[in-house]
Length: 354
Ligand SMILES: C[S@@+](CC[C@H](N)C(=O)[O-])C[C@H]1O[C@@H](n2cnc3c(N)ncnc32)[C@H](O)[C@@H]1O
Image 1 (spheres, rainbow, N blue to C red):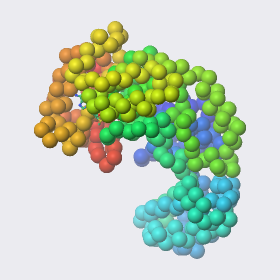
Image 2 (cartoon, rainbow, N blue to C red):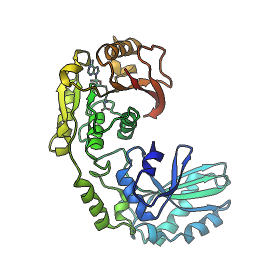
Image 3 (tube, helix red, strand yellow):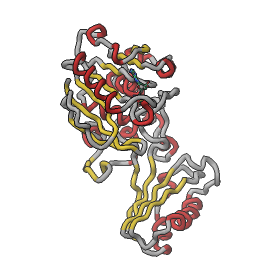
Image 4 (cartoon, protein in one colour):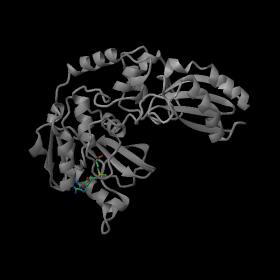
């Protein structure tokens, strides 16, 4: 999905390749900024600034010294250093960080403890090869800077996007989000439909980098803002009044979210034909495991959900999140499984047409 997003970006991005756990691409530093502004699916973007072999601390220090740090980071910063090592002679991650830190601090004339965590440097070694990278975003990219109130167990925004995208969701679709919580699917859907860059409402750690042009970035954002148009309709509902209150707080004051209609309602009471004459997309991330409550059983609850979808949402495209690595064998609906990992749990999104 990320590869597809990168390919369709109108930026000087080249040589896009799938690698384990991610996508690698080449571009000029300034071209990563629009990527961070526009990509909806990734959690992070790291900019690799050096790669070298080092099997002794003296070599590591020499290579770190050779990097022109002032080209990448603002003078005065003291970046946090995260080290991971794997099958390397320099295996002690704290010792690696301790050798790198004074060199970088000296190069940047760091005022120690000034914004200590605002920049993060990743030092990774495998088989004595070191990759030195900078984290572009600061807080992960799925933090869109819109949801100020969060109800229980929200899905990450990039995963909500991935599920919407897998259903084929577009600006022409009606969206029903009947277990909306604080509104992750609905807000993400509204942003997709209104062509709002996912990074529009947040800041990034690269905004203080020497290569960053505030005027250029602001211009890109202003161009994007000219096209913001709420589309919808998006029907968000939840049985829990607290969740609906949280969603209403998140919707308040955002014009592009005018397409989202929020109300308190039990999913099992929804009659889609009364909401809209058009069939569209329905997405659900139901409670499971210990969240479902003492006297209820996850399997039975999912069976009820699938029964309701099969009875009342005929012809709708569906994205339904299941706990576990595989779709359970209860096939009221034919769904294609997409396994993913979320907050330490294996989950599977079932995607299909009812
Ligand atoms: C895991 S949370 C979903 C959070 C939401 N998708 C998000 O990412 O922000 C599950 C939600 O389902 C709601 N829920 C549970 N049973 C429901 C029902 N029968 N009808 C409507 N909502 C229900 C809960 O109140 C809770 O907000």
